[in-house]
Length: 139
Image (tube, rainbow, N blue to C red):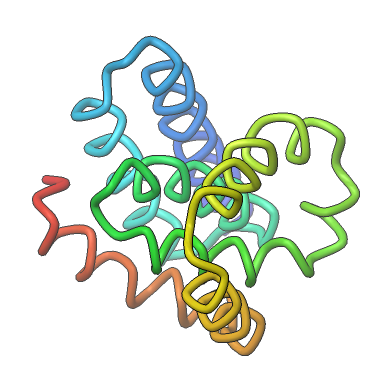
């Protein structure tokens, strides 16, 4: 069981970091496929921080216009999390991108989406996200 879990975590991390690099290189479609693969793998077993990393990579891709409200909800979910909010990397990358989105979005939409996000549960959100991302053509 331990070997299986460790291997799964390694694959999730690899796909997620690959997607992050692809995002920075303006390779959004391959990044979307890799994130969806990581998200599906995380459904079997993974540590919470890996799920948080995966969702952190989903947010900026959604914020490009596919589903801004969902990106803000994920930001509301993860922004209240000490692992994310306490991470300089998270604040400087994902946090900065999301704060830029917040600055250019209508305040009432931002407030409502962040509030919805704060009421979400991590694993349940990740599970439901697979179907939403498939509907957006991430496969």
